[in-house]
Image (tube, rainbow, N blue to C red; front, side):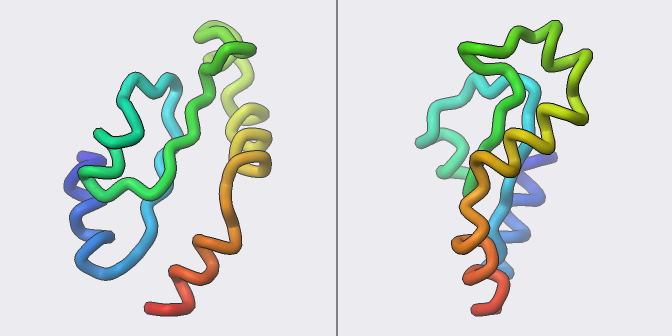
Amino acid sequence: VVAGIAATAVRHHKPVLVVVGKNELAETQWKQVGITQVISLVDENTSVERAMSKTHELISKRIEAQVDLKYFQASLKSS
C-alpha cells in the first residue's frame, strides 16, 4: 500500500512522510520506492510496548522533532 501511494506521490512531485511503529528498512530501501522520510515510534529509547501505549504522544513528539518542515513546505509550493 505504501509503495503504491509513494509511486503516485512521486508522479505528482509530492513528498511522502511515513510514520511507522518500527522501521526495519534501510534508508536506501524506502527511498527507492519514493518515500521522503520515515518516522519510527520505536527507537533505542522507546520499546514496542511504550510505543503501543503512548502512540498519540510519540507521534506528536517524533513529528515535531524529525520532520524537516522547510523541505516539505518547499516541495508543496513548487507543485
